Length: 268
Image (tube, rainbow, N blue to C red; front, side, top):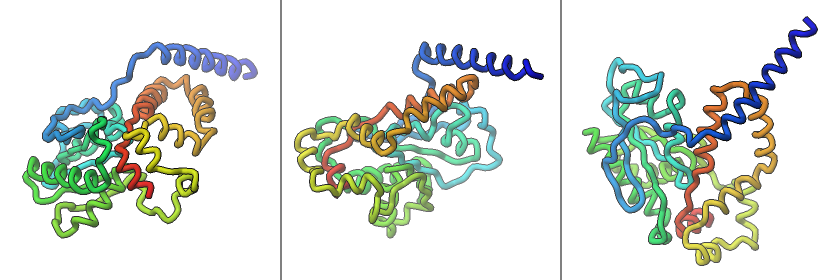
């Protein structure tokens, strides 16, 4: 009994080191693997429709019935849409497909210098409105369920409220979406400081650089990175955990700059 635990710990330590070494040699992990088609493209953004019956996810099964009302997923503007279709076995898109839903998602793409003057109305009003209209047309439905994630949830709430009379939003679900702005925590403290001038930033950059926004999120939780590394080593013996870690970190590092006018209006 006295030798079993040390040997087990030693074997687990060796597995950690071996797997971590392999992790550094890996290429980009497979993310956003569920097949889809582009059904609308405009400026830098696209509307994607996932193909029913072609998901690579293990949870995909033939649905018992098909829902008539489609689902439109609205992701954040500053992160890539494939967080909702991260990898086989961890895909919300594939999960919904497997239960008979017709699933669409907005890929906001990468804004260019010509997009610096796009504002909140453009994204929450015009672009989201056209995505919703196209989604309904493709699915031959009068309405669609809308699922908003993070900043995409803020856009979805604003659109659903402003265009409620059109009746295109069958239901609204939000994930990690900021909808109350009376107190945004530490970010609101920073942004309300007289030293922070969003107009000066936008005039200087046009598009707000993603490294600047990412650095701000790191400053919110300065101990998050060391804690993450400790957790990574502790679980490095688990190959399944490493697969998920690689996919999440790929998404987390794949950030997008933000249109200047939108940033300014959002902050104000």
